[in-house]
Amino acid sequence: MPSPSEERRPASQQGMRRQNLSVVLGTVAEYGPLSRADVAARTGLTRAAVSSLVVALHRSALVVELGPAPSGRVGRPGNALVLSTQGPAGLGLEVGVEHLAACVVDLTGQIRAQARVAAANRGRPAAEALAELAVLADGVVQQAVALGLRPAGAVLAVPGLVDSASGVVVRAANLGWRDLRLPESLLGLRLEAENEANLGALAELWKGGPGDFVHVSAEAGIGAALVVGGRLFRGARGFAGELGHVPVHPEGPVCACGARGCLEQYAGEEAVLAAAGLPDASGDWVALLAKRAVEGAAPVREALDQAGSALGTALAGAVNLVDPEAVVLGGAYAELGEWLLPSMRRELAARVTVRPWDTDALSVSTLGRGGPLLGAALVTVRRILDDPSTVGA
View 1 (tube, one colour):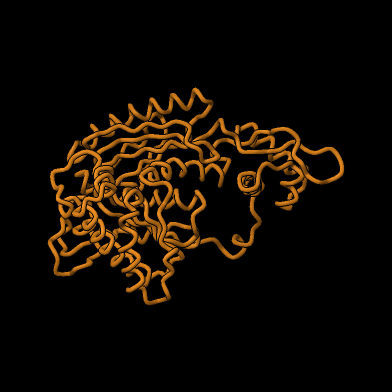
View 2 (view 1 turned 180 degrees about the horizontal axis):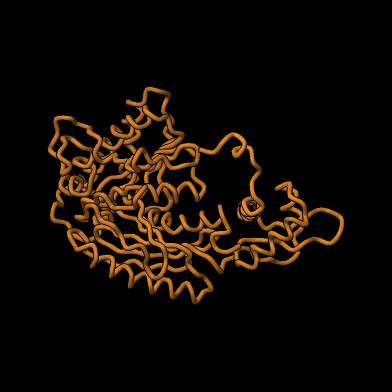
């Protein structure tokens, strides 16, 4: 532990420069296009300091200069600074139960290259799935490089529990993975893993979502993530958000986790398909359910209504516990929101007791099933924006 005198010691020049680089880049990211004078006015830094920092950011391909920026001031306007759409970028990867995906995102948060393929990954050896993913990712990276982008990190979205300290995939039941230590790198990039629900929530936050919300999503299983004060709440080991194993009927059927009456037994993929009379359905189950629901199939609509009721019951407990600003429905659920929302709203209105429930506080994510993959790529982008020195600025 540092001594009191050490704690009072001023930051080093290098530390100050790193912080100022972040301030300038963050200001351009949030408010650009801006001239150097505009950046100085917003940050409180001198124009000379801003100019020096901009040179470093430009050298690292983090910002570019456009034409003159209108300022409303007398005198010659300065050139407008914006985030570069070439240079450092983020690589997002995803292993789902029935697919593999990869994308590259630039500093503005735009997807510039992506690919998704069907893949039967349930019970498949992890090494085999990751080898196929590497081939897919290589193609996406080559597309990005041709556009002038260079991925600076890779993050993998997985449908399971990831130990936030070690990066080990502790359990991904629907894949059959357990205590899996991933390769340290992929395509020469440092590789790390994160729970898909967490990444979906982060994508929602970084794309302009509320600062306090519960994000619930589904693929084969059901996951949730809690964002508090603009930060992801992970829990002691990074396992927060296992909404799928919250009991909604304590005496209900036995779940694969060993407990009874878990939410997944009523609103998970297999449960909904069985209730809809489609237990042997294969392929894109979400698209199938949506198609049948649009056609007016009564068993499908009833199954979705029941799933929505179970979701609302489980989420009411979460709302009562943490009092979030909003609840966001993402992942596969986003594409079924039309039929899930009515019963979810009924249960939330009836069961939320800490405050009068505002029906508008429950919304559907516009990111849909693309949220986790986008979030995975944005992790690297956000790190660069927070600390430009990580890419040599």
